[in-house]
Image (cartoon, rainbow over all chains, first blue to last red; front, side):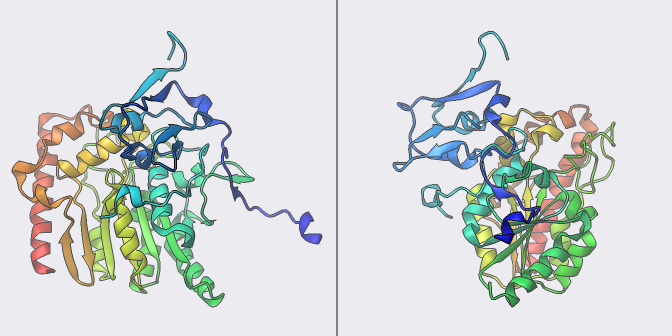
Length: 91
Length: 299
């Protein structure tokens, strides 16, 4: 196919356009599933789409790409998310 | 207002993009995807959002994008809409997504032209109140008193009221929104997508880097801007002006949170004197007086 040889300046949507952005993180969000009320506010406010929304509206974190901004922990109405330092004694 | 649980699960923003942690623009882009889905086609002029997309061959945004020069977002969107219509893609929703500089300063003539021609596009101004990706220079939408790298001692002029200029263009739909209230923004986007003609939405987007606050507080600062009465959510639709239900309580001055709660979270306001804060408080009162009157005129 001739088209295979065409080089177009056309990017396609894919995760990791800037690499594994999880390495940018100083603090990581840890969800206490026992406290979670499935309100989905963390999922809604997450600027990175790294809060994964499951079928039953429970949530988990995509640590490969989460940049650790902490908005999820700040917005959680029941304080079920804690920001934990990535390196003990560091950050 | 749409319930959070009813929002679509599909992601239109790719994780691992180039945005800073706590970025309000990626939040806003997610809501555009949730509201318009597969139909959205973005036109992005020079802005943080052109950086957020990341490096070829990947794109951090899951919507088709035409990147264009700073001054031409509304002009390019007008042309793109015409081209898509000729090709029979009538459902496509062309969305111009520009920053405050690309809207109120450099892109203003193209915006005004497209509004006057009543082009069938949605124009969203993501207002982070300065030129952030080039290093936090002042724009005409930077508020009074704010520090930027070009206003060391605080800006001396007030913020330009761009949505009001769009009301003066008498376009079918003008609205203000905030990343702190996503469901309100999504509702307004969905309403705009059903209206033919020019639609303008001004999205208030607090930037942790440029405003000097903790990235965890992006949504909190955005909510405080509304709750202190500084940022008024409203809709202007077919000649009728209405303050949105989320902002309506703050017409009563006693219901507003003190403005200092908003100011003290932000490093860009750290040098403000009491007299400067008084100027901003007076500005809030004047805005409310003006918009309450406007609501009476355009009811």
